[in-house]
Image 1 (cartoon, rainbow, N blue to C red):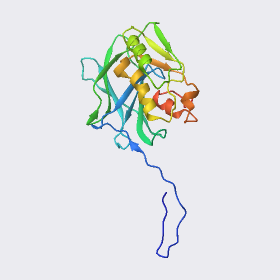
Image 2: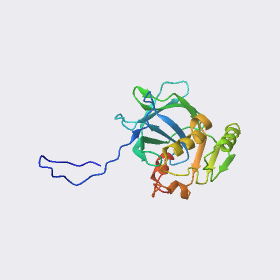
Image 3: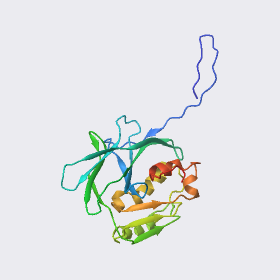
Image 4: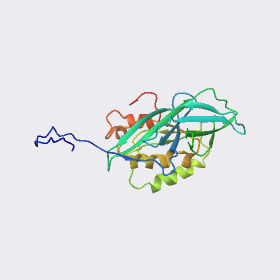
Length: 219
């Protein structure tokens, strides 16, 4: 609570102010990169320093070349209040004009604070997996399932909702990123549907919309 007090002891109205813990990585680089089905051919989202002032971008180039194309990201500051107050920026890009027979290298971030270079290739085919209602405190079983998915040669995945238990929980979203992010699934795209838990603590599901790069908030 913040208030002002003058020399005569008169006190202003009280104002309640919240502070948030910045969830930046120690090196300032982006993290939590995921690939999703959205608008465009390839949708990539990531987290970064809440206090960073530099514009977030994605750069991509055909593998083996230095012909980098730079695409400005859509970026918003997200706050999370379950457990404790935490904040991070969430950025996303939807790419178009890609060739199916080409492997692309990419990186996200800004000058001096780039992610490691990753790669992706547009996947044809109809082999896909379906997951739903996976929120849980113990991720042992779903981690084992995702390990099998990673090695299964799937073209894409469908997540039917209720992946996160509480959308206002930063740690809950980090659990989801550990399952669906590039460190687990590489460049496999996921199509995300919102369940009631994606609205828990977040009435318009705007956190899920930003993290999954959905074309419309709360869609």
